[in-house]
Image (tube, rainbow, N blue to C red):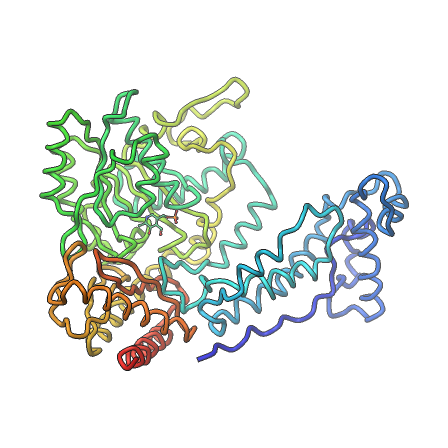
Length: 566
Ligand SMILES: Cc1ncc(COP(=O)(O)O)c(C=O)c1O
């Protein structure tokens, strides 16, 4: 079924550059340019005035003349550069962007769940050299909202059930606007003490949520990958000598590939990462882990780190965290928990039960841009012994301002890889302050219910096999006609189906997935579980509710009937 087209936003009247006389704030009685109280004559005068002024600030290349260069010559000396927007001009720019953003967000449920057809050709058509002249704002916004944004996965929409969704809280977009507009420096405590403290509060809230002690510290990163990398480097610095190449780390065969990447970036050869087989529920096998550790020690290697899943990307599996903490204590290994997807389910009672034991980890990654619904660009790392972060990252220089000697007041540059950095804390702090934790808890509880409901519906569908029951809000399943008793298990064979059936079933399931996605109400992705291709549903967007899940199940059933007939 074709999703209705995105309604076209109201035509804009504003152009990007503003003449110098527009750089000052309007008098109180003046109608705001572009406002509905302006007359048509005022509007067209505003538009005309904006054009030459916008071109004036950028000199044309040597030897070239243009109307724009005439305007540049005519610009009186001492006039403000268009780089220096007045408050009024900035407001108009933001208003113009909002005229596009608001209808875009309001129409998310009607937009296709994914539409990337022709996207590569569009991308190629956009290649261009550095522009010398300004472009009209209307044209730029038109390109973004009418052409570029629609050619994408609708990652913010309710039908996005692929990979790991999040949604993107608009409150965080407002926080980013504030943070970028005030452009304060939070890498060093002394430069913006109160703002650095707001970010430290966010980290402390997360640490309390994880059950960590007061001594825990942490940082916000660009995402889970960088948080996993920082954790791995911290563990390496804490547990291995300077010459660390005998160091060995362990993760299940279901670990996110950012763990392998982090190990490479941290200087370990690929063979230093031991992939431990998972069990039938895709959880790390403790017996095989212990065997591998013992084997490695016997061979003179230096086991130092175990990475556990608290919600794997493939199936949502949660490794046995308590028993893993026991094992790591016995073997004196650092336990890192990758809770990038699952972590914020700690806000719910069921989540806390599922993730119990996480508080015993040495470090934990949580991704606010997943289960706290933030826009992309925010991960978090928590370290139980906060001083370890400083030992791993504390490097300074003569030109630096004095850093805080008070353990309570955090210089983020001292405990993280970054010096200059965006004020990430605000995009987390603002929605939590404005809304409180309750709506987040409720939304996450709803996702837990929706995933269980979807699993029940799928279980009742003929020929469908649930490969991974939802431990949180993610499940994996497939069609297995003629193979009703195929046992679950990541590395198992195809069960009752013979080997030649494996390819047939995988093709059938890829076809099923393609037919569901072609309906464009939901977007799902698949994965390989051992040699079996599985479909996944990850319910995590705060915008996904029961109505969209019913559509998902309708489409799965209709597509199932089609593939079984084909
Ligand atoms: C379990 C897990 N860990 C780590 C990551 C990497 O996070 P990011 O994409 O924020 O770098 C992901 C991403 O989906 C994930 O699911």
